[in-house]
Length: 182
Image 1 (cartoon, helix red, strand yellow):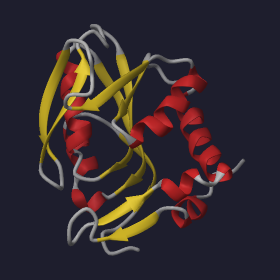
Image 2: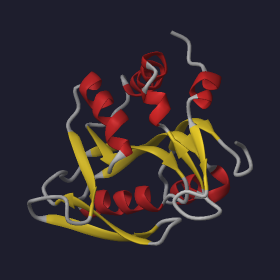
Image 3: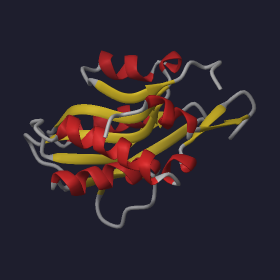
Image 4: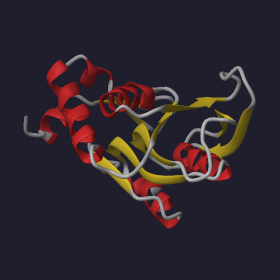
């Protein structure tokens, strides 16, 4: 099946002024209501990483779970959950970060990764990069490295992909939007 950026974009709903005025939220819920589009997204990521040299998939709470867990299953890779504060039951490492909406904390189980592990990170989109950069810092604190950060959507004008690249983390996104694009 050939990847169709226009199909994917047609199924990403812009929600104006959510969660606060001036923000255009990119809602991927309609994408998951289309089996064809969901398969295209998953297949693109699986094909990109099937021969790549990494051994874990990290997923961001919560929409990163949707794609990353399926890709981990398809590639037979262990899944590392990066959760919002207070959601994990065992010993955790925590990292504070700024989002486009305010201050937040990301946590991961302290025993999720070891020295030498390599991780592909998944989220639904890259905006300011705050969540993914917090995950990168947590991965590095455990002695592992980041192979790449992947998302369905990039919002390049918010600078997240550039911030990740500045930290030597390559990025891969299936589609991108300008801030004024609906």
